[in-house]
Each structure stands twice: as structure tokens, then as C-alpha cells.
Length: 357
Image 1 (cartoon, rainbow, N blue to C red):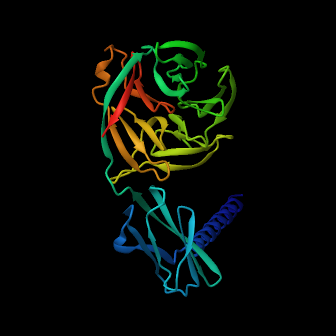
Image 2: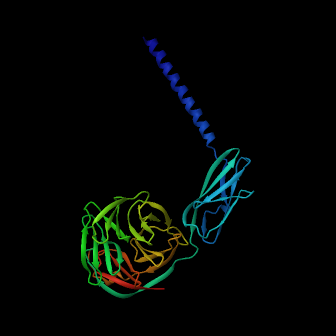
Image 3: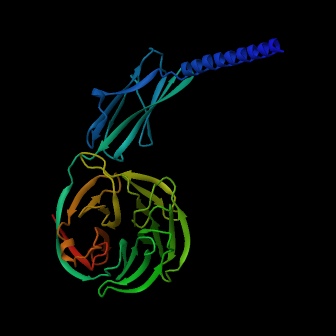
């Protein structure tokens, strides 16, 4: 009986050793197959480039393999290299921010895909602006303002916090709330934008937005977020919707499906920036509140360049001070009269301002 047990155990041990040996040699073989023969080298190993500069890259051929051809891809644009298999591209129309330079190396009937992370920045520091108060109007001190937008002379506002979130139609001159639609208590409402007679409203962390009919303000549908992490701010240019999510990305949404079609990353000449909150489309630019900052960023929607900053320091001191008073948040632009309005969370005033360079 004992001899039989030992034979069985020895057989099992032999099986385990054999299996492990097969796995070991198999893994070694796979590692050999995955060996990278090529890598991308940039001139002076540069990884950060600015508008106007030229990216120069080439293929490092570690094994002196005979290369047939190389195709480079940057910002989804494909270029085929010349006989020296190098890449040279001046940064002008590319989207800024974190990018990947990709190369497809063709050799001996095979193709290797290799990548190199690079960062593209603006080449100018943001212009600095200040402000002049043109007028001020009453504003509900109990409104935790998250979104603000005009249609004609009528102001629409989204307010946040769970149990307090709402969508409002407001007479901006008197501060009177004409219509107020409560948002279910489990949601923390965020930014809004209005397009094609629809109001689109974000929620913060629920990865869900709401659609309302503009005239009745009745909820008609929902939409989901996909790759964007949260809901912060919204604006539109009449064709596309732009959405901030607290990261460096401002997402570009399809106006019909609300699907995320791409994004820009907000950059200065020094780095990639984040935490952009309420958004407004103003004369071809995105105006954005920066969370916990007393200012507005002016962003180029085509490439993400942060072109200007409006310093609104001191504005918060011009409203009634109380324990709940919170940060600047809320930008609304009356396109027909070119008036710009701002407010904040639990602010008792809505300010019309003039931007001064």
C-alpha cells in the first residue's frame, strides 16, 4: 500500500515538474517572439515640443535588420518616411497635450508597432486680463451654481449638491426663478448647455446626463458618459458639445447622440492643465472656470491652447459674506448684445463684466 502511494506521488511530482518545464520554455519562447528590434529616437532625446518647433525622429535598429519601409502616425495623421526612415514634422495644427508618436516598421514580411510618448505645448504664455463691473443683479443666494446659459434674454441655471440640485429658468434682471425643476435627490447636478431646443444637464459622478425640452423644461431623455470620468461643465458651438470632466481633457460630443468623439487637452507654454469646471462658448473660444480659482481660462477649441486668463480676484468680496459662500462658478454670454455675466456658488449677485487686457 505504501509502495503504491509512493509511486503515485512520484508520478504526480514528475507530471508537475514536466508541466512547469514546458511552461518555462514556452514563456521564454514567447518573450523571444515579443522582443523589440526597433525603437523611436528623437533628436537629443527630446520629449516636450512647443508650437512652431519641429519633431525630428528616426528608427533605432537594434539588430541591423533590413527594413522595407516605415510609416509614422501622430494625431491620427499618417506619413510615410523616406529612404532614411526618419520623421520630421513642424508642430502647427496638431492638438496639444499628451501625444504618442507611433511607427509601423515593415521588414521581412513582418510589421512591428513601436511608440514614444511626447508632449506638445503652446509656445506663448497666456495673455492676462482683468475686469470692470458693468452692472450687478440679484441672484438666489441658495443656488449652488453649476451651469449658466442664456437663450435670448432668459437665463437658465443648473444648481448642484445632492438633495438640492435643480434646473431653473430665471429672470436675470430681477433674480426671480420662473420655473424650477427638481433633480432626483440621488444626483449631484453639474453644468448645462442648450442646443437645438434641448437643454443638456450633467451630473457629477453618476456617469449620466439628462435631456430636457427647452420650452416645457420637461425631461425627455438621458445620456451616458463613456471614457470621460465625471461630469463638470458643458458648452456648445452650434455644431458640437464640449464637456469638461475635471481632468486635463475637454471632450467633444456628437450633438445628436452625445457620444464622445474626441478631446482636446488644455495646455500652456509650461504644461498640461486640469480642473476646468463650468464652460461657456464666447466668440469662438471656450471660457472655463478653474475649480477653486478666481479666474476664467480662455481656451482655443481647435488645439487646446490656453490663450488667456481673466483674473477675477476681488469679485467674491463684493457679495454678501456668509458661512456657505463658495467659489466663483458660472459664466453666461448674451451673444446678441455681447454681454458677459458671471456668478458663484451661493452668491447673492450676478455680475455683468467687461474684460480688460
